[in-house]
Image (tube, rainbow, N blue to C red):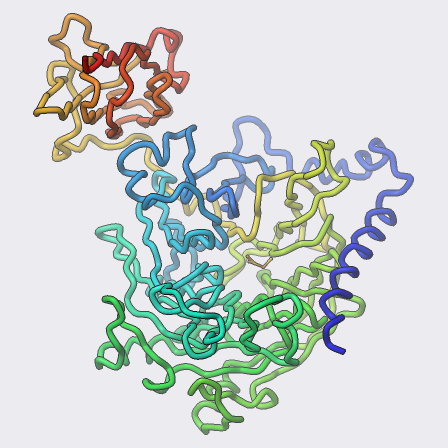
Amino acid sequence: MKKWIPIVSGLLVGFIAATISFADFSGKTNTEAASSNKSNAEKVYVPFGQKDDYYLFASGGHSGQMFIYGVPSMRKIRTIPVFSQDSATGYGFDEHSKKLMGGYTWGDLHHPAFSETKGDYDGKWMFATDVGNSRAAVVDLKTFTTKDIIKVPNTAGPHCAAFVTENTEYMFLPTRFAVPVGQKYESLDDYSQKYRGVMSAVTFDEKNVKLNIAYQVALPPWSYDLSDAGKKGSADWAVMTTYNTEESTTTMEVNASQADRDYIVLFNWKELEKMVKEGKYEDVDGQKMIYPEKQKGGIYLVPVAKSPHGVDVTPDGKFFIASGKLAPTMTVFSFEKAFKAVENKEFAGERNGIPILNYKSVMEREVNPENALGPLHTQFDDKGMAYTTMFISSEIVKWDPKTGKTLDRVPVQYSPGHSVAAEGDTVSPDGHWLVALNKIAKDTYLSVGPSHPESMQLIDISGKMKVILSAPVDPEPHYAQMIKADKIKTINVYPKDTKNPDAVYKQNDTKIVRKGNEVHVYGIAMRSRFIFDHKAKRPDVIEVNQGDHVFIHLTNIDFDEDITHGFAINSYDLNMEVQPGQTNTMEFTADKAGTFPIYCTNFCSALHQEMNGYFLVKPKN
Ligand code: RUQ
Ligand code: CUA
């Protein structure tokens, strides 16, 4: 009986998307649409010389990168390479970023999260996780560059992250796929015994700009989907959704949707922290692992309608809202009620040693907006009103978490995953703007073949909700956060770092040093030449022997905003960038003999075309 449910819901997506597509656009010409949109155009127009009010940091999904847009113009300003190589900036080619990437070439960046102070975005750091190769990263918002990446062990796809606690004490990374500890081989027949859904508690050492795993929790072998940290009165707590509590090992589409209920995992991270301090953990390959069936306390299960997806904490920290995915329901749960149930030990059994709370004693209300299908994620405005994306019925529904009443709804094109509100995950959202992150653009833009771009739609939420701009975007906007522009304080140039042994700031200090078959070049880039060795007959030429191991340390001595130089070696598949004042290193083995021009890849001056040299590799024999 139950097997048809996902199939039907799949059909429903197609059917409803098709219906909306014809209903909304039939018969309307571009001009008609444009004239009715005139005031909308004015709202999003940012005249030359003025800047946008908000930065929007969007997940780049399987591009592995983060994309920065301005709101309300929706103009793309920047790509920050994080988990994938990027030849435009030389990311993944120079030594620093190559090391950060840990030998991987791509990533699947899901949920970006700003660092927070007192539950407010502080504009200092941005965190993100990689579902593709199980990593976590931190980006410095002074330079919009990736500063640290860690590989998260015992975890396969930390999709459920990153959501930070109120003062960036922790970022929790629960796994999407259950795997055996150490990702060792174990037969799927032993899934329930040998597999685990590990969650990592990651801390950020701001002084040394380092991510660290403080401890891990070996949760049951379920899939963990989305999470959120508590706020204010619930600040010591966090919540996350689960699916496949059926522990099925094949054909998940059908088998992971059998049970009528899955769970929200509710945990107190202060208690887990205390357990670790008291030594209540096991050492697993150097990780402090809490096994909830042995080290009891701090973790509870809240039953919820089957296969929930998003879970979001209200700005006042009083409620958490789970969204149904397969059920049409948003369920509002009360933290206060949950705390009481925990205190009174009102448990309705347990699973894998974790107590289950009574659904009725924690649930505040179930909300079913009429004909709304596929609720996924919820954002909030300045009045505490909720905005939930409806994937299947392709719309945003505005509703009041305190009464459950539907207040407004607007169709979006099509199938929104997340949406993001201005300062939407803080204790004090701004209202005004909401951006729908749509999975399907279909007939919205000029055709580019069978696959279309994803789409973001800007919605004015200051009055009745109105879509006022649609922008095609790069894949894939899984989630985004929107921050007030004046909170971001970037630097103009990299300051001189006289302690950096690789940096050279004067022409007379440039040199090429040979140690056996190692060649170290200490060079500078300036408008419009390279100087690798000021004493050489040709200061812009590097000559090595085939097989030499080459280090090129290059400093951009143009301390002038936006004067970035590139450094590429033709046919050697190498490129890096040096931003104003920056020193960067490239390391490689000169295994190919021959003559290879060097050139600046970033247009930097009227004589940019003259900014070149030669890399000569003398053959071995
Ligand atoms: S998930 S579309 Cu990757 Cu955030 Cu819900
Ligand atoms: Cu330096 Cu172009």
